[in-house]
Amino acid sequence: MASSSIERSAGGANISTEVAPVGLRREREVLTVALATGRHVVIEGPPGTGKSTLLRSIARKNGRAVVFVEGNAELTPARLVGQFDPAQVLAEGYHPASFVDGPLLTAMRGSADARSGQPPRGGLLYLEELNRVPEETLNVLITVLAEGEIAVPRLGAVRAGPEFRLIAAMNPFDAIGTARVSQAIADRMCRVVLGYQDEQAERAITNAVTGLNGQVVELAVGMARATRTHRDVRMGSSVRGAIDMALVLTGLAELRGEAEPERETGRDAAYAALSGRIRVADGVDRTPESVIDELLDVLWPTDADEPPDGRGKAEGPPAAPAGFRPRSRAGRDRAGRTQGRAQLAAQHAAFADVSPEVGALDAVAVDALLARDPESAAAMLADLAVATDEGLRAAARQLAGRVFLRLGRVGPARARGTRRLAPVPRGDGDLDLDRTLDAWEPGPTRRPRAEDVVTRGWTASRRAVALAVDVSGSMQGQAVALAAVAAAGVVLAAGDGLVPAVVAFGSGVRVLQAHGVRRPPEDLLSDLVALRGHGTTDLAAGLRDAAAQLAGAPVDHRLVVLLSDCIHTAGDDPAAALGGIDRLQVLVPLGGADAEAAAAALAARRGGRAQTVRRLAEVGPALTRVLAQ
Image 1 (cartoon, helix red, strand yellow):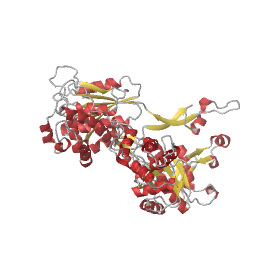
Image 2: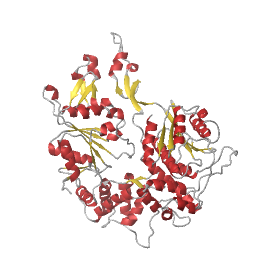
Image 3: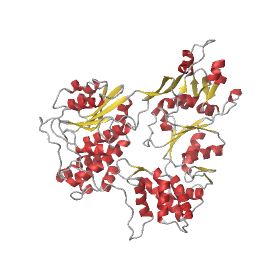
């Protein structure tokens, strides 16, 4: 661990060092050499791992100026590169002196007097939150990274100085609001991955920032680190949480006149410092405070005769979802099919481990199997959701919602490129000087009006999405698991936007989520895996109901994503049921020559494509391609 003198901010949230970040010696060496050899670098790691601290330390030691720009969804190319000053253009026309450098050109030129004839040396451009920046803006960097120059309209080519480097920082891809960085950008940068420091290093950081030591620091660091590995937590606290907890705990004890902090004071401090930093996993019915209570019981146990506070978990598994309701009684399909324990044991080698006795489901064993063999675990969990064993079936359905939502989260992010910069008359955004001047006819009595101003803003075509899932007899085990992960991916990709419709079909159709009416995702997935038919498949009915869900949506484009082998055995020809669908994309679980041919022919009728998914890892990329179009 590198020794360090650490600056302390008023809130304890910002940590910077005069010499080197604590516990990042190897990463510091790699970054130093990468910059010295002319490489551009992206630093990836969760919040609080010292990304900014590491860069500032190296820049300060080498005497390099750093130009900072915050990456977000509103960063346009003009804001990154720079733009002509409108007042000067109106008065004097387009001249290089009228151009105001943005952070990119400022770093490329390296100094304010670079235009005086001295060759620019270049500086460091620190682009924070790289994977939150729109793709159109990131594309500006491709030529800069590859050729060291950029062509600016009406200004000409700007060459970067030899010391120009781009240092980008980003959170892991599956963090909220992030998206995958294109391969064109990733291929032009080295990547340094930061993880959380070890416990000793985090204690050293907390001690140096707070000036505290002993049991208070041990407790604060222990609590923060425990949140990262808790089974119900998607993202835990960084060392900033430990710093805040140590300071708040000490301050509260002093305010309350406690010679030694009492447990209730520790609980209040932990709530204040950690609850806002904890992100509970989707599908888990509990609060951050209940997680903190559980961890506090372990690290600061109560007396034996003092019962711990409630944990916030649900009292038991929810009631089983309603059965499959066919449209008509013409077919002989039952509401669903179940599987006995002997059948499940024959199909799944790990069945005895996850369900050692009737009615039991060992969630820890399921998690272990998911870590070891996610394909087998997901397939088994899908089958357990229709077990004849009532207790096992209810527990599996409850767990399935959480597990498949977690698996779906690593699938598609919101596809880059769905938003584009476009002219917007009298709108918000950056001034489009060229279009404004083209539209304005100056004269002795003519003055520009508000309606003459044209801006460039982010626009997106409005789109409604429906997901149609085949739950007929051909969909069992692994195929159901793939469908559930895909459904989770589509629901999560919608974010806070328009809520997709989800329909399930076999011989009949059931609407699991109406378009625009949000359900808890874990409940939706629990219902989905519980539906299991056998016999006929009315594909046309499923497509018609999906289209009907989108019919009233005030949108420009109606997309249906179909999860099916596309082999229909009942109802009309599916090709005759595509009215109201602008594009049909098909995912074929497990594939097969007949299924793939039928799916390709059907998707082509509505400008889409068919993709086969045989493994869970293939679902995310397939959905990304589907939703990006």
